Amino acid sequence: MKIVSTEFENLFIMDYSSYKDNRGEFVKTIHKQTFDEFGLESVFTESFYSVSAKDVIRGMHYQNPPEDHVKLVYVLTGAIIDVVLDIRKESITYGKYFFVELSQNNRNGIYIGKGFAHGFLALEDDTTVEYHTTTSQHKEFEAGIRYDSFGFDWKVSKPIMSDRDLAFQKFTETISLF
Ligand SMILES: Cc1cn([C@H]2C[C@H](O)[C@@H](COP(=O)(O)OP(=O)(O)O[C@H]3O[C@H](C)C(=O)[C@H](O)[C@H]3O)O2)c(=O)[nH]c1=O
Image 1 (cartoon, protein in one colour):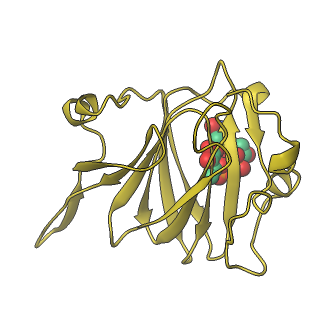
Image 2 (tube, rainbow, N blue to C red):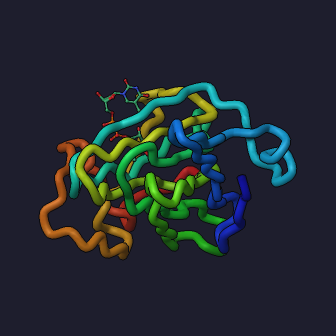
């Protein structure tokens, strides 16, 4: 795997290698020694995956301190546009967003440090996204920002979303604790 820096501090693209043979494919997603070289956390307390239909948008989610966490995200099947919003008030990229296509084909992942809101748009049916987080879910610290309130164009007219995600406040109304 190669870890690729971005213009955002503590946000990295994971360029995973895919080993193919006559049986199929093998992809390593976490490797402590490589993560250590870049100062990335490699101990995760929770992992989960979601399966989404085309045009589903999930997000923008984050967990507030003291249960804020690093998130490692990659696609098992299908493809997404993964979107991250910097909500760290002192960051030079505060309020800026980053987006990247993660897919079964490019086998890229994303390492999202603390202080980012995260979401994605599924580009295909049966898109499976796997996450690892460095703290577990604590509902009392869960928070979110409306997907259409920080300037990103999702390029989908009728996204499929949860009522919870649609009820999040706008970015401009959000008081960041980061
Ligand atoms: C995260 C979580 C969820 N759940 C239950 C709660 C709901 O009944 C169901 C779906 O949860 P939610 O609607 O929060 O899932 P997503 O909207 O896919 O959120 C996920 O996708 C976005 C893009 C993220 O970045 C979040 O970190 C990640 O949680 O699973 C649990 O029981 N435990 C958990 O840790």
